[in-house]
Image 1 (cartoon, rainbow, N blue to C red):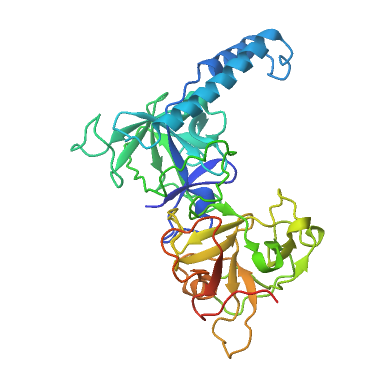
Image 2 (image 1 turned 90 degrees about the vertical axis):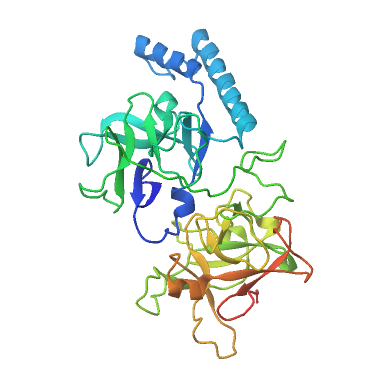
Amino acid sequence: AGMLSVRSAVQLGADDSPAPTAAFGHESIFVVMQQHNYVASRKVKTLLEAEGRTAAQLAGEQRMIELQAQVEREREMNAATFERTTGRDVRYGQVIQLRHTITGAFVSVGRQAALLNREGRRVTIDEGAGEAGWFRVMPKLRIHSEGERVRLGDPIVLEHVGTSLRLRTERVVGRLPDGRREVSATLEMAALKLSLYRPFIAPPHGEEDGEESSTSPLYGGAAVRLVYEEMDGYLAAIASDLLPPKDGGSIASVAEMAFKRHTHSETSVAGGGASSAALVASAAHDEASADTMWEVLHQDVTSGRAHEWGGRVWVAHGPSGRALAVLDAEGDDGSDLPLGMIGFAPGDAVAERRGLFELVPMSSSAAGAIKTDNLFRLRHVQTGRWVDFA
């Protein structure tokens, strides 16, 4: 058993480690979508094949302009259908598509042979997958039949519509270079299970895709910026020289963290290092900066439910995947403890002692789900210390 994940840009595989990796939210979350319509897209493909030219070469011709307009309308209709059907039951026999949340690309079956199982076909993600991304949800057990509602935990078979091949995880012939099991499409019957990360949350009307309303709940794994109210600045990840780990555990790297006030130019991440952090003044902050993008993850990173007060969390820098941590959680002698960032592994005892925090409200009467515009404090679980800026 293992979580399906996307890595190495496009390759679908299965990570069979006993615990999810810190990159779970970036690799293993997919949106179940309805069967999209690709009539206009198919017309464009037919035209290009007949002419033996590229879309760029035909861009100025009226027929291509008209077809591109049809493709755009088709995309809008597919999106509108998804919004309208969101929340409905998926039933056996229904054709679905799986969209990778981070890349926006669809799981698809190509014409090439699989990398390891040469009798199967390669399974990747492709933004322009089209009909190659259609899969029929079929029951694995005889007690289920077409037309019945698919329940979470049911063993299911994903049958590719175009080839009638089924998705399966290769368990005999080696592994991919990154250590995962290859996912391929074959004639063999293999079962998969869907686990709910969170129900699809449609963005509020009038807001950009993926942008959270200021009054919406703070969901696990959602990308956010953390504002330090007293000093009017954003928490940002910055690069500095790495320090060696203090023990032989699975912590990848540790670095000192200095909470200071910086201009944006002084806090840019060099090569995605993200080994320490600082405050970036709001007036100097570039809204497109990846330095200040964080993910407040549940202790169980496989959960995307709304955060609640008192919940234990990882505060992870999205681009680098490293988490805020107390570097010396064992040596509390009453003095200030240094903060830093670690390469964390969910389920690792050392990482959890150093990197788990609690979300504490400013008001004792606060209860229930946390909103994205709520003020909160961070308390380190192991030591009971509060995160503060000097």
